[in-house]
Length: 176
Image 1: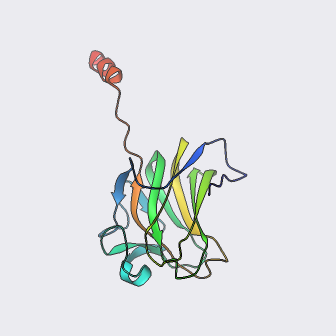
Image 2: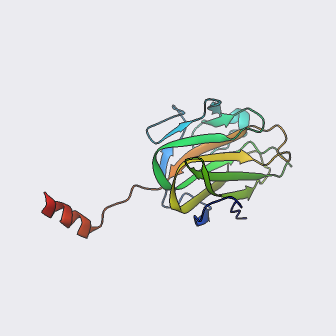
């Protein structure tokens, strides 16, 4: 299901259901933060075996925010137009929506949501692309349906860096 927030700007948001053309930014095996993104202080590296029954897209760790009702917040080092990640810790027989929102500064550009499959694995991908660049994102679980569950993500993906067109490269060459 696709949600576009009522207070969003005119950004066109499209839901992404698989990493596809996105580039892996962080698999969370060794570092919480990297050159692409910095996460909120309450998020930490966490063993997948404790949050998702050990089922993840890769490795044995992910990122978890254990504060009830708190999203995982990622602040990007440079604006991008697409983000996605695997999520989990969705406990057996507990259905709720995972919600991914993107912001430009303090302005909400839009959001998407995805119903959890309630299998307690990090095996669902939530992502979005925007026609307006954004500099931060939040992922949260719908409350109160998710009760006190911690938000868990793994394998963060971002839009690939733009590759200059040949004409742009030619102009650059002439300029030099």
